[in-house]
Length: 91
Image 1 (cartoon, rainbow, N blue to C red):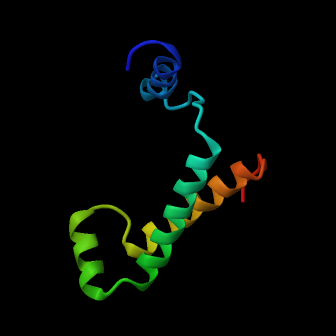
Image 2 (cartoon, helix red, strand yellow):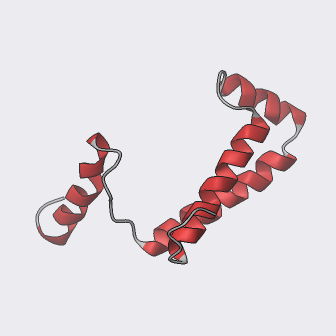
């Protein structure tokens, strides 16, 4: 992107890559969509067929199992919701 507002957005979204503790700006609507998607993935993982669970475990070998992933994704979804509600504490 060349100059102006788009260039500012590119800088804002790439500066945090090398510093995971750095705060970065994300549009609330986009954050809401991420939270919605993560919440839907939790429901899908909870109801996934055994074949899907097998594929998931094979693809993510060494990672948490399906239940562990669903728990982690649920936590992420809750944190996103809390951020959008202005809650600075833990869910």
